[in-house]
Length: 226
Image (cartoon, rainbow, N blue to C red; front, side, top):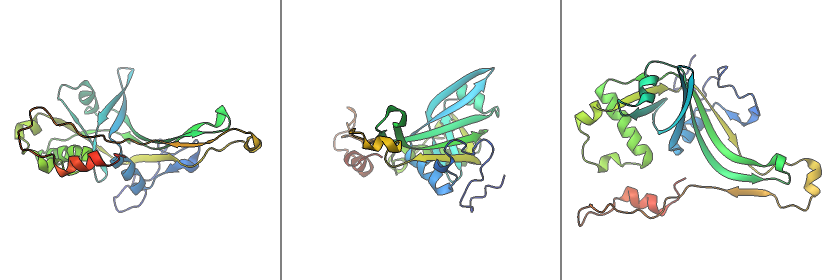
């Protein structure tokens, strides 16, 4: 499958082709990147010895590669690095869609589904870049505010890379779509927008006297998170 980064779209595969409500589907590379960059948690689905698992975890993205990380003792990471097929999903919930009938209630959302096989990252520089991506994915520029990472910390962390080769997005926006006859019903309908916000940051009790909250945290505390 040709997914060179100079193309504007991912080529849909049998697994990523949106079959139900295909008008909501998107294979646009920038759209998929934006959803991944805005999300914080992904869910990883995989099967080991006939037992399905779906595990929530953090992630980071660099170009067309999603990175996963954790302890070398992690059963999930041990399983994934054997090359089994996995499915990764990220969902952003944007609003509750309240229709005039229960049947047409819905949600506004943006989601991404990725299929593939993760690869163990062993090269030191790539592992460090992945850990930087994880950290800055949560708070922009946080990596540069921290003490330098120790080589043993990098070596003691398992990092897996999942190429974004089979990826698609599905998005719903807008008001409810009722049956035409129901628009005459005296029932309120509309959208309740939802968002995630960061509240005021709470300093750790052991922050040294005189150490100010960094700009990155102050900006996050004063603005909506997404």
